[in-house]
Length: 104
Image (cartoon, rainbow, N blue to C red; front, top):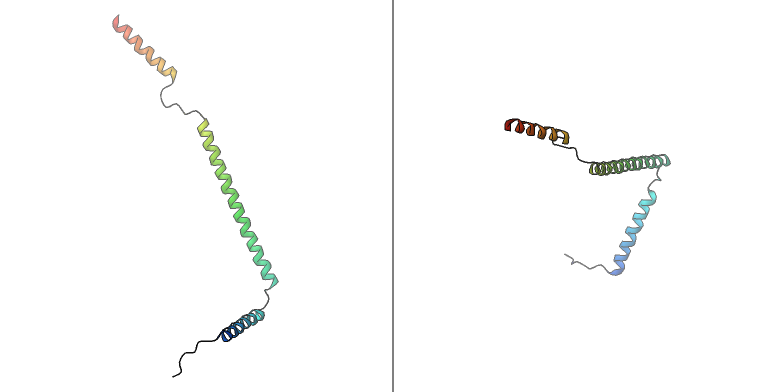
């Protein structure tokens, strides 16, 4: 049985050159892309980009609207939750009148 022989530098470069030539031959044998197919792919890519741009614009508009709504809500005075000033005065007057009636 023969022992393993380390390939020399010249042998390694020759093998690399052969592999390079084989890859170039394979690439040269490949047919050119069909112009109609290329145009179709470019149109599809442009449509995808347009849809993505519209989606980004809609999201940006929604974000701006949400920010504007938040600012408007912060600037508006809060809704009163309890009785109004007039109701409070009326209740106070009733208590005063009841107290005055009890005393005499």
